Amino acid sequence: MKQYLRSITIIAMIGILAGPLQAETFKIDRGHSHIGFTIRHIFAQVSGRFTDFSGTVEYDSQNVEKLAVDVVVQAKSINTDNEGRDRDLRSPNFFNADSFATLRFKSTKAYKTKEGVFLEGKLTIKDSTKDIRIPVEILGMGGSGDHMVAGFHSSFKIDRKDYGIVWNRKLDMGGMLLGDDVTISVDIEANNRK
Image (tube, rainbow, N blue to C red; front, side, top):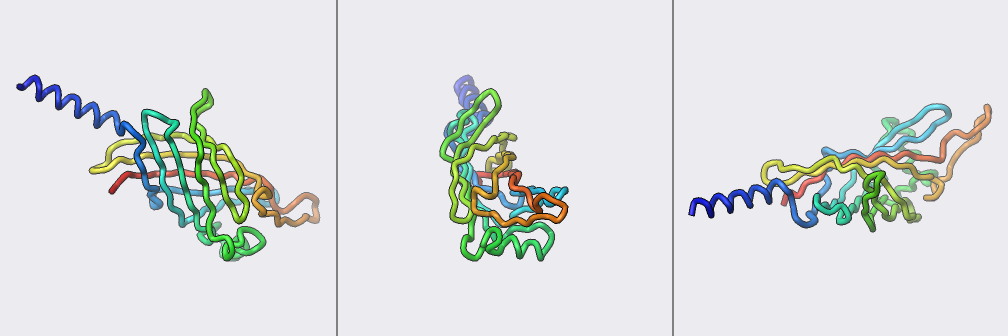
């Protein structure tokens, strides 16, 4: 009997340490997550972030192909620590947040290569939806009280003109005020708390 109970205990511990055997749904913890961006302004880089977003991550630590992400960002939450610039970014010159309230990324496929883990999916900004591929760094997963916590990071570039954000201005010295490439950096902490 003692041997039987010992075996059951070992099996249970292995199950706990191994994590979920199938994809779990993790809810993004906004308070411990960050969605930011950087763009060239004349010769410098200007950074900003979105402060209001939500979403889910489907994750199975044993099978990366089950990884799936769905993130919705509120356009009006853009924040570059400059009120005048933020108003302009919400205006029709840029995000037109009154007409297009959200940005969204929804993955359609996950896979692993020798370069790392990648997600393919659809990124929607304003009225444009484009297929993109982004790298994903899986930072880890572990227990925290009665729930599991997982962490992810991604950094990638998009061309803002692909999404109808085309405003720019020529400089007297030559060149343009703004760059076209935007680097997006995402740090996600998510949990499966019920």
